Length: 258
Image (tube, rainbow, N blue to C red; front, top):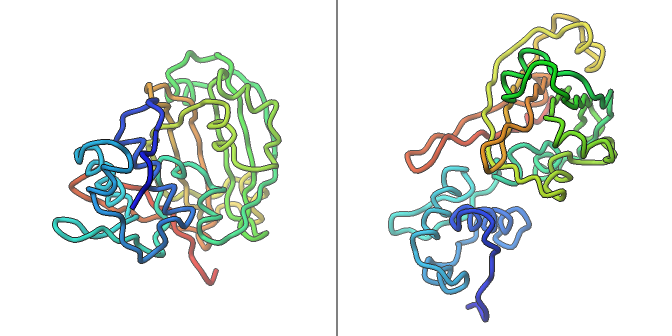
């Protein structure tokens, strides 16, 4: 089926690189919704590897809700499930586009500050160390959806001083700069809008917001971002898919008809 072996550069464990390649093929339509994936044997030949890494990568895709099937059944690409993958789990821009929505943003501020106690503890730095704060209002199809407040360690955040934060995805830009985002811990709760949040989101102080707090790390475990994303509840909700094969996968879902 394939004429040559695909070469993947050895920058991370093979199964992880395979899962990223497989997810990219699903996201770009190479493997469209409803299609059957190539067999394990075909994938082994294409990537020049054994079945172990292939099966680990496929297990990850199942945990993300991207494919179904297994245990004797050929995997099938699922439709209508906006899975968070290693390439998209942090990116509002990529998630919005995957949902067929046009993302947008308006930067409120980009500022170098001294880390406060909460950010310092989360990012494993000292209180008073330099950090870069980025605050943006995010849009879906021109409608206000979310207030994004991110604090980056200075080593990473300084790269954003040369980036047009109104121009697109911060995480896509950071990947282009060689910052290999690997994992994040998400905490989700409901909060009442502060006066500043209410003004930014065009709602009333005290109105309910759906808050996602996120601690993002690179492959070597370095914490690089501590963020708080506050969504208008009629725009977005969250669901969790749990599997025995892999970690719980966070899935961000757009609510139609808001």
